[in-house]
Image (tube, helix red, strand yellow):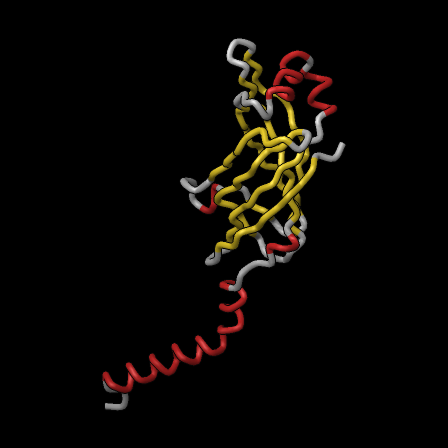
Length: 173
């Protein structure tokens, strides 16, 4: 018999090795980490979404524009940030997609800008009371006259790799 079980297994192993060697450069491309340094986070807008005069709580809506100039599509599972207004820490926000499958998370496609929306509730404290009072008493003028800054990090994911990306951005009007 020309093809015994041993020869079939041997040819199968040799064939698998040959295919692996031929496709190795392509496999390495897909499992290599994306260059997160080129991904650009911008604070596009800060708006008041809910104002409670009784409790002095203010809910702000933040829009992040994320631009991906690289040649790989990536996504994010989590964005954590600290919001500053006139250089005072106002609060800590988390935008999490960890419980959503990869195909349902926001995609940062090559050469495209993706907008992420996050909400943060400002709790009054001794350090931020002036800003909160200004936002409550005169919301439209205060939101425009405040210097907004966000300092944070995002988990950027490609097919097999998760990389941390730090950012520090100001709202540019």
